[in-house]
Image 1 (tube, one colour):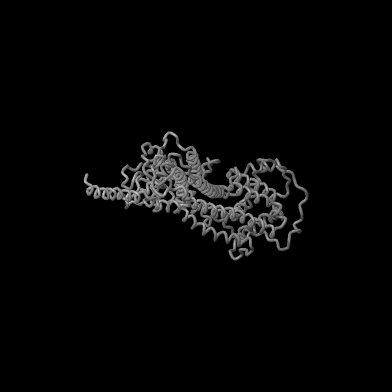
Image 2: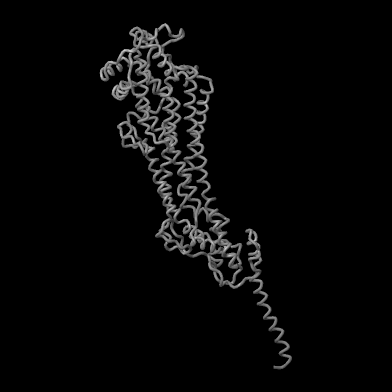
Length: 567
């Protein structure tokens, strides 16, 4: 070859060889990856300046890469951490709903019971002293058992209320018959006549229905909030499987290894990864939705006549009405008891009527709203009524939030993949990461649930091995849903009332058509109207017959004063 030709070709060949090399060096730069990797808080000592051969990669495509083995391991752990945080963030709404509302409702119900008991006890100790103290345990035990039931105690409300009325009958029977001495056996015989004689009228039956329905609804609703809170907290703390972690790494950080740190995953690609990783959580959805529906039903009870405040506020009036019935029918009740239990032994000499206080008046005075007490005990219930009005708004509020929490677990993948921090969005389907390169994602989107992941192209899912932890949460929801449905029908899941009074009609409301409309409207249920003059005549006649002593009249007036003092 002539020398002049060689002189021309050699420089040109060198130039041609140098051009691809320069282009190749630019294409293999890892500068962007280094910046993004450092922004995650990782040391840059792990990352090369230029792409290297990728045969060492275990998850990402084994092509030229900016990732070392150490980088892939660290980014794999980072993808796991970010996924766990995303699930917690996405479920934050439902978790805080149950946590905050449980605290609010529970505090109110407890405060209502504590203040109702304290108000009654303090007021009667100040007003009646030892006379009340000698009989106060009957009422104190009633509150103790109600509180024990609400806080989860194994209390049969129906039996507890029956026992209350039986004990009250024993006390009242002794006080209206002070001329006799009654042994424990005799008083036990007296209590057996409670249902047969109905000395307190229809009040015990009505109050039993009202108290049991209200307390069952209140306790079960708070228990439901507890279960919802615990399930949401547990399910939101995910433990991704190795197959899920591989898929997460491939979706979130293999773009880094390919030198494309700013390219985000395609939306449909993200959905398949999340549906595979959250397959068991999606299976929780059916039972969760049934649980939410049952919670909404019981919430309706809290808004209506079943609410606990509307029972606890006028309970004193109801007991007063019952004692008035007992007083008015005392002669007939005593005669029937004497006939059934035998004639009791006479008591020691009675105290003279001259020992009665000068200002003692056995007349039953009608309730006067202007006589309402202004003591701290009285105003505490006023405050609770104000709190309850606020609580009624809270019931409406939580109903709306409960509705929003339906299908929360099956929609988790969609909620996560809508996050602009995670995917490129639905409007950028061509310029997104599809698991291999920057291009459209072609596979179809899987359906929800474990069994539908058998052909998931992104996550290896063993559909034959359901998550036992999730199955435990499903069972907890199923049990609670059953309790809620029973509570809605007025039945305790542990002590279901099988009597005709509460078994209900076909409506499932747990009450009879001729009873329900008025039994819970306390303002329309009044004590029998008795003219004051007639009362005075009756009391004088009773005194003339020697049937009543100072002590008996004092106790009757004491309890009847509940209406005057409390209302």
